[in-house]
Every structure is written in structure tokens, then in C-alpha cells.
Amino acid sequence: MLKRAMDVVLALLGLLVSSIVLVPTIIAIWLQDFHSPFYVAPRMGRGDVPFRMVKLRSMVVNADRSGVDSTSAKDRRITPVGHFIRSYKLDELSQLWNVLTGDMSLVGPRPNVQRETDCYTVQEKRLLSVRPGITDLASIVFSDENEILKDSADPDLDYNQLIRPWKSRLGLVYIDHQSLWLDIRLIVLTALAIISRPRALAGVQQILVELRVDEELRRVARRVDRLVPHPPPGATEIVTDRTRVPR
Image (cartoon, rainbow, N blue to C red):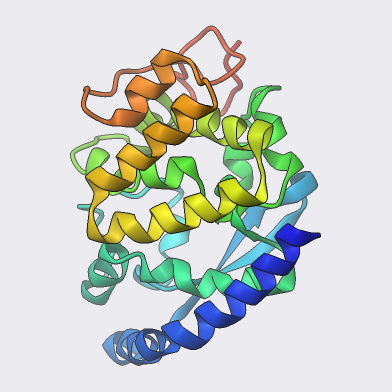
């Protein structure tokens, strides 16, 4: 109950404060091609129930019909204004509306498309037991996801091999230890990441140490080592085909 109350209050304040940036950005998106500045993205929410997530459109119209779910920094579908939007995570601000409607929370595992949730392992299905969020541990650790995938020949496969295993593990850590205090810390660290990503990552490390998370996950969360393919939680095989669940 307290979490929901905090979500509503901060989402309202966030929309009011960010309107100074959102309004000119919305106008800029519309002026570049005279199409809707919003993209309503189908995502899977709590209980594996679909909902419509509102985002500022950073790609060309109908970009979602390409069949590619993951996006790299060099993705040709991203518009000129879209590059600016993604650099400063402005496309996430509109999701405060989804927080107000109750489809999302400020803090929680990031929502995914059905094609991806259908491939979740049994352990990963637990990510659908809570409201998805705008930010969480993984959002801070992998805020450079586009850069990781920028030279990838197959962004979806590389995402499932290099990023998904750790994002899912971090999401499960949050679910196992969620609290109002943890939410507040993650909101602060998310804001801090805009100014200093190293300090934000250090804050994540402190949280993981306090929660006694295993060293392997803590090491990946430091983001000093090269990412290598790894099985998702509950699996023994690395993903080689994103249309099936690894065992």
C-alpha cells in the first residue's frame, strides 16, 4: 500500500516537473515527420497480463514491424530526435502515466514483449509476479545496453546471451528483497546515474553487498569485465535460439 502511494505521488510530481522538457520534446518529435510523438508499446505486466506502455517515439513510424526487439546505438530505425531522447532516457518519462494507471511501478523489473516472456525459464517467470517498473538494479547496471549491442549482427541473440541472464538475476534479487527503502535508494541512484554512472554503479554494489548477493553477479554488476554468454536463471544452456526456452 505504501509502495503504491509513493508511486502515485512521485509520478504526479514527476509529470509536472518533467513537463518543461516533455512538451518541447513532444513538439520536436511531431515536427520531424508529422506523425504521433507517442509510441504505445505492448508489454507483459504483472500476472503475465498484457498492457499498453506509453513511450515517446524515438524511432521511425512502424519500426516495431521489423521483428527485431533489441535496439543498438547504431540502429537505423532511430530518428535524429530519437538519438537525443534515448541519450537522456526521455522516452521513459512518459511511462509515469503507466505508473498512475497502475500498470507499472516506479521500481520493478523492466517490462518485456510477449515474444521474450514466452521464452522465460521457470525462474524468470517470477519476474511477472510484480508490477514492472521504470527502473531497477538492472536498469542502472545496463543503462548502456544500446552501446553493448551497437556492433552486433544479431542484437536479439546477443541480448539473450550477454544481457538477459544478468538482468533477470538482478530482477529476481529485487523481488526477493523488495522494500520501500530499497525503492527509494534505486530511484536516487537512477537520478545519480545521469550525472555520474560510476557513482551509481558503486551504489548498486553497496546494495548487492548488503543483500549478500553472490560474487559472480556482483562482479558483472561492476561492469569492468567483458560480458560473455551465460545461461539465463534456471537454465544450464546458453540461448542459441530465442524462440525456445533453454534447459
